Image (tube, chains in turn brown, blue):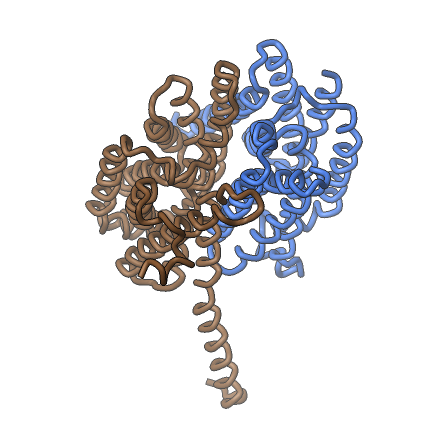
Amino acid sequence: MSHFLSPIFASGFFESEAVHIALAVGALVAIVTGVVGVFTVMRGQSFAGEAFGDLGTTGGAGAYLVGVGTLWGFVIGNLVAAGAMEVIGVQRARGRDLATGIVLGAGIGLAALFLYLYTSEHSTTGATVTILFGSVFAISSATIPLILLLSAVVLAITLTLYRPLLLSSVSAEMASARGIPVRLVGAFHLVALALAAALAAITIGTILSTALLVGPAASALRLTKRPVTALLTAAGIGIAVMWLGIVLAYDSYHWPPVHQGWPVSFFVVTLVFITYLLSGIPEARRRRQTGRNHAASSAAQPATPS
Amino acid sequence: MVNAWTVASMVAVVAGVVGFFTVLRGSAFAAHAIPNGSFAGAAGASLIGVSTLFGLGVFSLGGALTIGLLGRRGRHDVATALALVMMLALGALFLSFSVEYAPEVYSLLFGEVLGISPNDLAPTAILGTLCILAVAVLYRPLMLSSVLPEVGEARGISSFRMEMLFLAVLALATTMTVPVVGTLLIFSLMIGAPAAARSFTDRPLLAMGLSVAVALLIVWIAIAASYETNYPVGFFVGTASAVSYTIGRLWTAVRSRRRAQPSHT
């Protein structure tokens, strides 16, 4: 069996503890980001997701500086950023990108300062690359309880608020007409997004975390319009790209040009991108078909006044 | 120091002009994504041994076109996010191939404005002039298509073509600025300064001029502060941009309250 599969799974794949942790954490994070991502994409908050990823860099660099776990840095940094965005008004669609951009710009500036202080104190440059590009193989088993806790919190927020969140994401007017506190629901979603971005950052790095938050969810929403199906599809796509990425990264230790493995995050993001492109095909085909039917029906009834 | 000052001033002028349209069109995300993603081009260029400027140009233009084309069908913010992470992932791959390049990641992302050499002057000036010229030529149709896209369409200005052209200008500005000041500086300037300027006036040309002035002020303060303290210049630019935006918001709030008061009495 293992001999038969050896072209796909390089030797030692199923024995390595780093791989076990990577597969488990990857799947968990893929589920959490998929669920949160569907609402994020529906609400058009991809930029906020991206901003949290980048602001995680600030938190991560700060964590390096004071010497606590990187994940704590991501979480605290993102929560502070969520508060700042809420204060300067991300709840209105107009001007939201601007508010996000301002917080993001100031945040990256702070990250530059933290990284500068850290690197000049410790005279290493590795911190920058580790925080920015991360690696799911480098997750230590000590952070797993925190990852579990954060995932539980995010899923609890999102699933408790499922109905009001869904309604206010589809139509804020209709939701407020039914007495849903739209702004409060939005704020809770922002917190869930901030935490989910922290989880994505620890698995594939801060600046790539958006890929997990947005990619699977956007692909799922192109394939189905039904919310529950979309949530499940997004989680499924997330797990698939994570696991396939991990397998490919493990295999790539034998690939040229340097024989030290290609980054996992590269594979995950590439697979996410390909999935998104492929998910547009059914829609495009449908559109072409309806266009043709339309043309055919209008040709069949030439200029009959209705 | 004089080189840094000259180059940074050129960057501020371009950022003020291009940023005005960025804020007007609500393209903050694209203005973040194109410079940020194009750093992969610099990493790739150093890997195959061509000039950094070339790599940046190819990646920023490629990224701009991908954002424009993917965003035509489907959600614009999703397209931008995915184009960005795809470019960054390629950057991560290129970095993993070339070990010696890693320390330069920091300066590419966060800027190393005080390390600018006289050789950087000419390319920055040429690309900057191209940027300003492009904006000048496109000014009327771009303005119309940004403010009233429907009216623009009715007059035969394709919104899609304008979006592509604008993204191309953004890519050009990126190519010029990233190698000297990093991706952070240009993004903060392009958003903070014009957003602040727009709080003070509604007239487009005045707002654009004011936006250039604010950008210049931010850059000069940041360079001086960075020179004094030795802290990274990006930190000061990010902070100063946020402060200028806050001042703009406060001014708007004060003015609208003052205008509202006579109606109460």
